Amino acid sequence: MEQLHGKALSYNNLVDIDASINLISEFNEPTFVIIKHTNACGAASRPTLIQAWKDALAGDPVSAYGGVIIANRPIDRETAEEINKLFFEVITAPDYDDAALELLKSKKNRIILRKKDTAPPAKMFRSLLNGVIEQSKDTKTETAADLKTVTATSPTEQEISDLLFANILVKHTKSNAIVLVKNKQLVGSGIGQTSRVDSTKHAIAKAMEFNFDLKGAVIASDAYFPFADCVELAHKAGITAVIEPGGSIRDEDSIKYCNEHEISMVFTGFRHFKH
Image 1 (cartoon, one colour):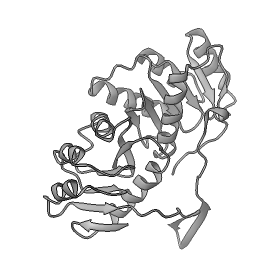
Image 2: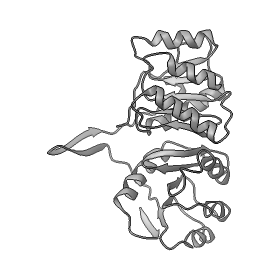
Image 3: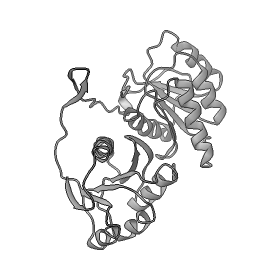
């Protein structure tokens, strides 16, 4: 990182910035992500950066307040004008137009970072009890070739695109994690709940709060569904496609429910399960 403006980085800032960089590195299209307490509260990929920003913010404009913003394209003046309307802690991008940078510097404490092109570390560390534990970083990102359709109904091309987008987001969301996506926009998420059902209910409630129509949306889970309850909740909200790892001894319960209601479900065979 190169800090271009703002106050000194705090511990919380650094943790959120780390989460934002790990997530944004997964996307190739113009994308904005808004992070709050290491989880995405807004994300969208669009043909233009300004539209990506508007749709990322629309996902949860309440949680976005005071958040950490990251983009995978240089920030131009037009996009900066929209971003500047929101109070936020940190913004990171590969670069900034001169006019955009001048505008974003209008808040003296706002942290503006330029991301350098560096390879991410292969290992992760965490302090625990009397020491430190180490593990390899989760570097797996599923593609369409990794998806196994387990239902009579197959996902459409648009649903596959959204399923993969949702699966990236759920990979970087604290478990138990549920993510709802429609047209490559995060429209609801259930984060860090003690029950996967609670995560699903929370994600749907979030989407309803901001008036998203979930008809045709997709749902991603970071671990298998041990019962059909989450799939039923998703279906009743309008969701038409599901992505999950599979691997429960009761997978057939969810598959059966999907088949009875013409929902497509794909298994990845891999649990991300961020802790």
